[in-house]
Amino acid sequence: MAGNTIGTIFKLTTYGESHGVAIGGVIDGCPSGVEINLEAIQYELDRRKPGQSKIVTQRKESDTVQFYSGIFEGKTTGTPIGFQIVNENQKSKDYSHIKDSYRPSHADKVYQDKYGVRDYRGGGRSSARETACRVVAGAIAKQVLSGIKVNAFTSSVGDLFINKMYQELDFSQIDSNDVRCPDSSTAQAMQEKIMQVRKSGDTIGGTITCVIQNVPAGLGEPVFDKLHADLGKAMLSINAVKGFEYGSGFCGAKMKGSEHNDLYNQDGTTQTNLSGGIQGGISNGMDIYFRVAFKPVATIMQDQETIDHEGNKVIMKGKGRHDPCVVPRAVPIVESMAAITILDHLLRSKTIKL
Image (cartoon, rainbow, N blue to C red; front, side, top):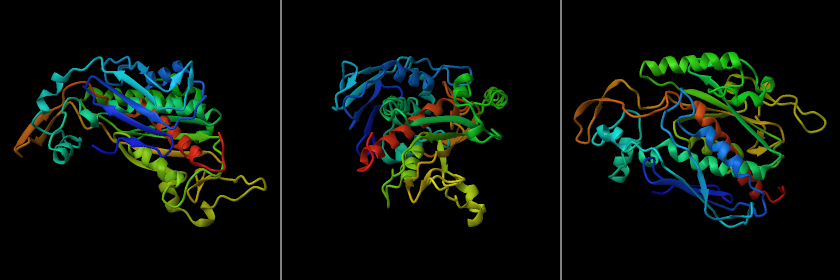
């Protein structure tokens, strides 16, 4: 299986399956001499881990990370950082019913078609459990980035949206509720919506907005390595992601140039930021902001018609422990992938130093 590495200089390679012995990764290209706060890394993992609230999967995993290389006396050495997270709470028998059949809209059948074999236990490599490895790398990237701030939050669940600009929100309130929405009244409605959907045996999607602040101008390598293109790839590589838009996004397609252009101030900043902090694929020093769309989880606790490995129609009902909405747990994943991408571009830049 190819495609397990992301990055050009700051690289992350991940390994492992949902119900295997462990998951883990190797981070290459991390600068040396960076003080690493291990508690901060574990904190980020705790934000993503299962079983943390009543609106997420009840699989119980401590997601305790162990580092094996690349960190000595609390600092990075510049050598590959190897790490592992042991799987502690597998219930593989919950997936025996899909051994010979395929969940609709899941990766089951395409894995079978491509490789001729698949690990049906929890989805194997296609499981979102792999994203814990990304959070480890993202937490390290955040510490290297220092002054650059990366904040993501739940901006919608189903048809419930935050009706505020991100500048009006207090990012310190993101983790004040289980939904990770920094608007209390909207968060309450979102949580009630998720619980209602869960009780019906169904799932629901939503969006996450991410804001990256204090990014220097000049990041991005046109033509094919534009900053927003690499951010888009990073986000679209996350399980269940169906869409990515930055700046004005699809709303910009409805506007005239006279409405959409960001006029300059004399200091080089812009009066508006419909460009989303990126112009011509290069950061311009303004806030970078984007939105990521997540589909409803494919595994639902309702009867659905599907096919088995011989093409026969069968009825399937989901079993096991699954998120009714992946969005709240995906917030730290989005932040991590953003931090990984920004750090990689900083290290690639010949004119900007950390």
